[in-house]
Length: 183
Length: 178
Length: 208
Image (cartoon, rainbow over all chains, first blue to last red; front, side, top):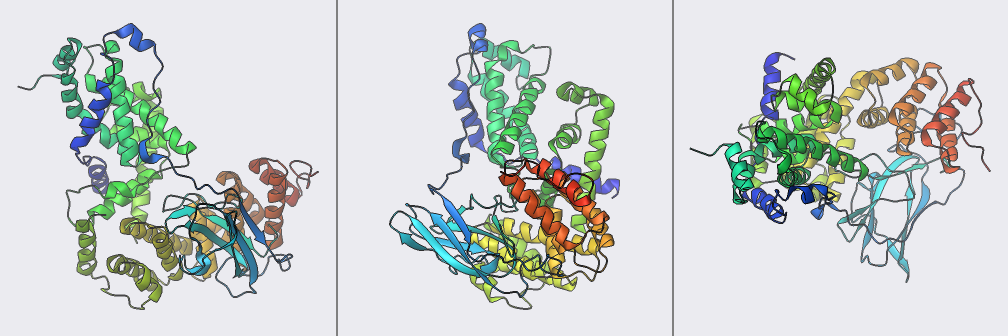
């Protein structure tokens, strides 16, 4: 890449932040809550305050537990050497997998994953007990599947009992399930 | 003529707290830009900048007038960004690079997609490379000043800046070829 | 995302000669994405198709974004990034790679594998699928094995031209060790040594 291109990158890096009158006000509101700086000794001696995290805290669903059960045992054929045995999207015998989520407060839960086109309408869970257990059984082909639960149409909940993918482009993780081998 | 930073600090020391608002107004956009480039999203950047200005005010007694106020406060900001980066790692929240692309852009066309790509490539640099790169090319600091801020020697810094620049160029070249 | 930016994107899409509508309409996209976002996603898919890259993973990524309520800028960013990784994976793995290999390769690139690592895998397995080693890599990382350790383990097996069963064995034994309390990194290293015959084939922590 030429120096000219670097100039283009540099110009972008130096692009000014968007001005927002509220920022100065918010900073000054915090500053005014401070004692004047020249009662120096006393001020310097105190411990720093914990910064406020505002709205950035994640709200966690009050799910008591999440269970994932692969109903069918011994799903793995041979030694996994077949050419495309390892990934989703290939024709292979389907195995029933039960997904379970416990939530007392949810009014609707759906399962979304690569196996149903991430369609929130495709695979609703059914409430199976009064103490908040929801479940659904889905036949899945052999391979690696990614999924999550969508609670009340908006809350993305990963399965704490399953491995998670690294944080992805949408800013959070997904659960991962390998069908075809014992978990 | 606008009062200098030093004059404003003197006024604050004499009890005119409002003079601090002038200092904040004067420097906050530059601080925000650094915070956003370092932390990748506006919320965290604003938090870092706010904490930096509050701390600077709190510790104004330690500020010596022969130094530049903005350079002294900027040092506090760099430290706040490091603290927030560590917190981001703990709460598994990393860059949200797309937010920057929604900022106003001076250029027409695909510039915001370009902004997004630059920020994304920047996000992929480890913070040990990102910080010196930004200090050098965005803040236009000398290696002596960066060395003072980071505690790293001049040759190590030069190497990091060079590596950061090369990686950024390489990544963007790949992106532009699609 | 502001309307101004969306409008700009739509305008540019037209002015840069990108197709104005989906060449192959995908009803899933029609149903789940707003028209402007859909046009952008379809443009990325068309571009991928023109480069003989698989488009289904790109459609799925966009649908995933829609399910998660992501805004158009982020969906576009995600699909474009995936298209780039698929292309990079194809460049590294070769033009005859299967879709499964490209998808697994793109995922491996996302978690930090270099294109050079992919090529090295292909050299080790010129006529067999490298999807299994790549899926094993992703799985190890998801289970907490540091990416550098996981990549080294995959390399080591590839360099020794180990069969697919070795990857499955590595994965299963590492899972077992992690469940028995071993650290993911040490589990991977210990089990790798066992498989390569350079050390004990025993667990990082003895199972109860």
